[in-house]
Length: 251
Image (cartoon, rainbow, N blue to C red):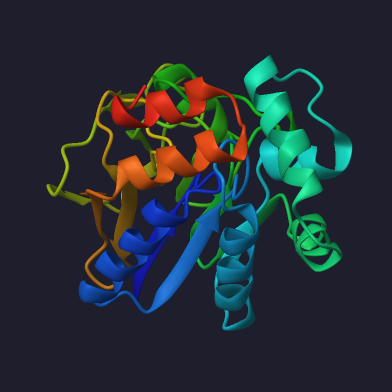
């Protein structure tokens, strides 16, 4: 199985389309979408319809905080995010809203856990930004590999399987695009996937990840896309200008 993983698409049709094409060109035959399908971008309905189609064919989909906010409101979010959620709600039909409501907070497949934020308290939307947060997440689950998003910046953390009482044993690093990472079986792993639709690691290219369960190799991918088109759609929609501008800088 070659699993293609996507997170934080945020209504960005142009970014999602190129990532799906690139993943298929690398032989992906299983798909996982790890939350925040909507928010910020100008094509939420298209993104939901596309991902619901993949879900109908067996793709894994979990809910992010922006997906939940469509139903619950944007309490706790900054003003730009709240404005985007209110705009999004007005442009989704009942079927799209029902799909967002129906997707679970976590999902699992074999040794893998899928969650938008962290495994210790998924609905608290904790950001996994380094070793401390990654270790807390890994200790909260019996799964060997956890995949998450939420941060909009890629990260790969590891911890020895036998470190049950040895706190502080996790290590994390920023993965290199295109470099293979072998997920050794004597380790637990937490991979933060980066963002398809709104990267914030000062690289504007769309981010997604490939994982082969046969070779146990994880590869972080980046794909260029038509940022100008996605940004212009945001402006035409009347969404906050900053949501368009930041796409060009990846921050």
